[in-house]
Length: 176
Image (cartoon, rainbow, N blue to C red; front, side, top):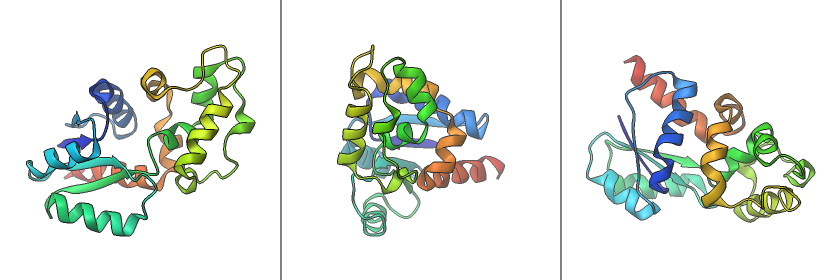
């Protein structure tokens, strides 16, 4: 199984490990493709592949239809809603453990349905929650791998229905 995803190549191992923590051992090849457009282009070239991209605040039903028309009927799109950082906000323990002293959990969104939180609110929450941390403020390029390694996939599964769809699909494929 191949999963093309939006993101830097340094995310290959952490995303693979994060997914396998919840699915168990599966034959999954994660291919980070930098941009959303690059991931879509690579997915189109591969029959029966999966695509994982940020929804970037777009309404899901039209986005799913548009992406499906781009990648073809044999490929399967999945979304990080609104973006991967929503997974981080879902697991407050991982954030606390990663950032340590000075982390302000009270700055995180009160809405526990993190997929309903806007991109701007996710970014502001991470910036404000980490403002006084001994480790600097949140920085995607510096902190994403460390946070992915700390995330509890069951917590993310329960908080992020679109992540759950990906995991359920992978489990279904593995069982077939």
